[in-house]
Structure formats: C-alpha cells, structure tokens
Amino acid sequence: MIPFNIPPLYGTEESYMHEAVLSHKICGDGAFTKKCDAWIEAKTGTTKALLTTSGSSALDLAALLCEVGPGDEVIMPSFTFSSTANAFALRGATIVFTDIRPDTMNMDETLLEAAITPRTKVVAPMHYAGVACEMDAICAIAKKHGLLVVEDAAQGVMSSYKGRALGAIGDMGCYSFHETKNYSMGEGGAILLANNALAERAEVLREKGTDRSKFLRGQIDKYSWVDIGSSFLPSELNAAYLYAQLEAADAINEDRLASYQHYYQALTPLAEQGCIELPAVPEGCVHNAHMFYIKAKDIAERSALIAHLKEAGVGAVFHYVPLHSAPAGLRFGRFCGEDRYTTRESERLLRLPMYYGLKAAEVDCVCDAVAAFYARPARKR
Ligand SMILES: *Cc1c(COP(=O)(O)O)cnc(C)c1O
Image 1: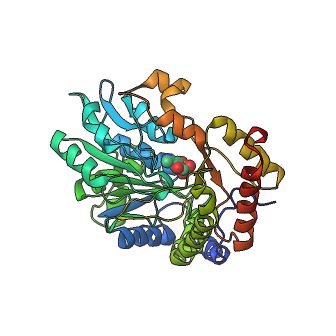
Image 2: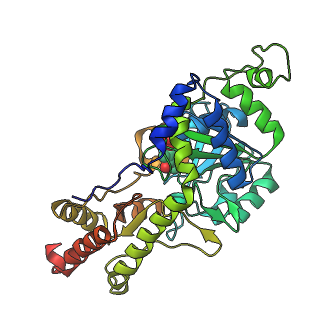
C-alpha cells in the first residue's frame, strides 16, 4: 500500500521536543518559536515572521490586520481551501471569486481588474501546489487600486517567484505547517509581514490584543490591553518539532523534488499520447514539489482512475470542490465573470502520493498503475 501522504519526520524532532520539555518553557514564543521565526525571516527576506497555531489562524490574523468588515469585498480564486475565504467571511466581508488559469490552477491575473469595485479592499491569491501566481501583475493592479495583497502561501514554503520567496511578496503572507504540508508541526502556521507597521500590530493582535511582546523585550515596564486580538501562539513543543524540519528544509525539499521529477519523467509518455495532462511550472517560478497532480479527461474518468489506483494499493485523491458552488460560498460570496475553468479543471484533477521519503520504486509502482489504467480499452476505463 502506498498512502497518499505520510507526515514528514526527519529524525531530529524528538530530541528538540525533549529539549523544549526540559526548558520548562512550553507556552508560546520561547526559544524554538524564535528560531523558527528567524529561520523564516532569513529564508524569505520578509520584515517579520510570527508562528501561529495554524495556516487558517494566520489567515484569520491577516484578515484582522486588513480591517475589513461588512460591505467590503475580497477577491480570491474559487479553487482554494475554505480557510482563505473563512478568514474574511468571519469579518463580515463579501468574497468575490474569480476564475483560474488552467495551466497552474492559480487565480487568472488577467481577470482581476474586472472584479474590482469601489468596495474591494483585498486580493488574496493562493499559490496552488507551491507554484506561484503571476505576482508582478497582481501586485501592480493591487497598487493601482489601493488594495492589500494577502498571499495564501500555505503550500508555498521554499517556493519562489522571480527570486522572491512566496509569502514575502504581498503585504502579508500565510504559511501552513499542518501535517499534510511539506514542513510540519502537527497543526501550525506562520504569518509574514512586509512592513513594520503591520508587524507591530500583528504582534499585539496575536498576543490577545496586548503589548506583552514589547514588555517581554523590556521596551515598556507594564503591558495592557491595547487592541482587539486573540491567542495565535503555538506551544513550544510544536515549534521544536517544526524547527527540526526547517533546519533540514533543503534535504526535505530535494527529496520531494526528486520524486516530482521521477513522476514527471515516468508519466510523460502517457501525456504525449494525450491520455493525461501534467502540471505546468511557468518561467520564473521555482516550486517545492508540494504535490504531484495529473488531469484525467473528465470527472467520470477521474473517479474510475482513483478507484483503479485504490485497488492497486495507491492512495490518490481529488482536491477542492470550488468554493463558489459550495453552500457557504453561495452564502458569503459571488462568482465574478464566467466559470470557464474552475469547475471543469477541478473535476479532472487528481493528486498522486507525495511525501518526504517516498521511494523511487514506489513512484514507479504508482506510474505503472496509472499506465495500466490507460492501457485498457477506453470503454473499460
Ligand atoms: C493547508 C491550507 C490552509 C490551512 O492551513 P491549516 O494549517 O490546515 O489551517 C489554507 N490554505 C491553503 C491553500 C492550504 O493548502
């Protein structure tokens, strides 16, 4: 059996967690949290990085920082995770969904400007599979219209766009360290802040609306409630687990990229025969092999292929049901323009096993099972 995902375990996690236990400092913002924040800042060049309890809570914090409310509009692709939309819907904002590009499954930057109204406050691109959105175009349009850019870079740790780290391009970026992501702490995430004003306020909102962080640094002699906020700090135990993986990020990244390349090569003949489509990585984008997906002809063929792979002991899964057609999407948002690709492409996509430690022989096994499916006469698929 080749599972779809195995949470990353590098090997140094336990000893770092043990160290955290012995430090008798297991609440948030201890030594390991600071090491993780510093790692993200050094790696991405962002002004300030702060660990959060999840990728979703990083998005919640970003939405709070955007100061959106009822009547405001936030533009995002419909093909994304519920958390991208929840963060802003929780503030009472209206979600405006746009169509995606079929090549990367990312927000189509050429449709962004038409979705902007006088009520638009934020654009929230999501980097699907760790492959960057067309950020130059998105940021230029946002600047022209005075919009904030919040990157949902939950899948984009270690990816870049024209040399800039994903999550560190817009005003704010959100990472996830959930166990399904490339680097994990079980549940966790981080927010990246592009400037000092946002960084200072994020620190307060994250600490229950208090200026406790300043107090702990000795910058003030008492701390008090100064703003709205909540607790977005993860425990040191989780941060210790994550730090082990961040330290080994290059090795983990290379391992995943090798699996990705192997899939790509092994499946190229099937793509050349027109049976499947393989993922595209535009020029200027360096990705992190967050996932390897293929596209079948349509939803019926995809369902049959998933069932066939399951029988062969391979865990393959589909991905997002477009938000605009989901019950909450209908309540809290609207689709702008024509749904040319979102529904059609999302119904064709399936994800193959991808995790740190996946072996070349296992990738071959998966690809053989896919090839066996397409070797059958079309009516028997
Ligand atoms: C994983 C993910 C999230 C949420 O992250 P959690 O850490 O699970 O809360 C948000 N957006 C996208 C695109 C994701 O893939």
